[in-house]
Amino acid sequence: MKTTPVSPAPKRKGSLRMADIPRDVIAGLNVGELEAVTLVESLSVDYGKLLQAVAPDAGDETIRLMQEAQLLKITGRMKASGNILHARYGLKGIEKFAKHRSDTVRGWAAAIVSVAPKLTLKQRLAHIADLADDPNAGLREWSWMALRPHIIAELEVALKHLEDWSHDASANIRRFASEATRPRGVWCAHIEVLKQDPKLALHLLEPLHTDPSRYVQNSVANWLNDAGKSKPDFVHQTCARWQKQSKSKETAYILKRATRSL
Image 1 (tube, one colour):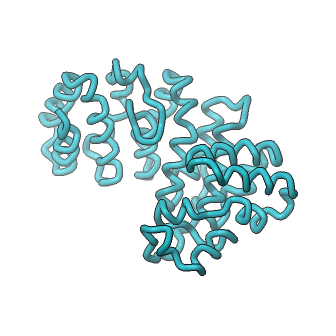
Image 2 (cartoon, helix red, strand yellow):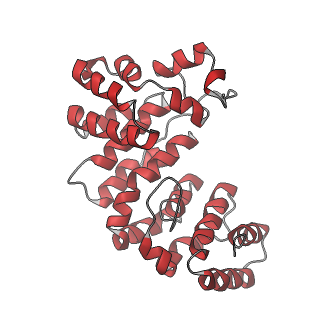
Image 3 (cartoon, one colour):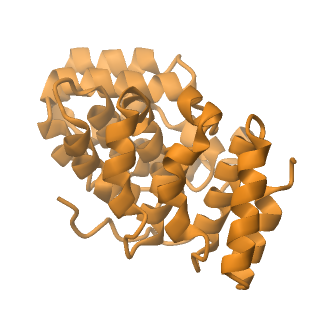
């Protein structure tokens, strides 16, 4: 069940180069006292040190495995962390890490949701809901990526469950419904079925074509831009219909971005 999300961390200017990250920031990231502000800062986190600081009960072997995972690329690193921590804590690891101050630690909770066996898609969505609505933008990305393989594997079921998410009061949740089902997406496997038949997910986008949130607008536009690379007629027809239905500036923005590659 969805509960109150983690409170936003105090704002600070993040570093764009590894060499520019202050030592005190690196130290704070590695003990779980700070959140990463940029991707570069996320890449700098030492998973072994962080786990030792936030979960000393993990044990030497689990910490060693997390240190080895540090050698992987970022997406592989996060997936490996899910497997390692699920082996140590099971589903209890989700609750253990999901409310931590560190966005990386909360990302581990999303990774556990992804790798845990024997969960239905509905159960995974319930576990991921808080993380998908997290104040940290990076964690919100980890959340939809965590469920992407399961959405692809059970596409029909996923499209049905996510319909309610398209109507949610939270822009983050509405954006999840769009971003998690993009036909091509970023840093993830394509959804071949939606590349060839994007109208299957049109019911998720319909409630969002006048969405007041720019965060959601960009995702919807990118969804259609993805679809247009294989089915341009679908995008032309959808945009023409939306243009007739709505004269709002929100819709106009979506249509302009959605057709940028046609």
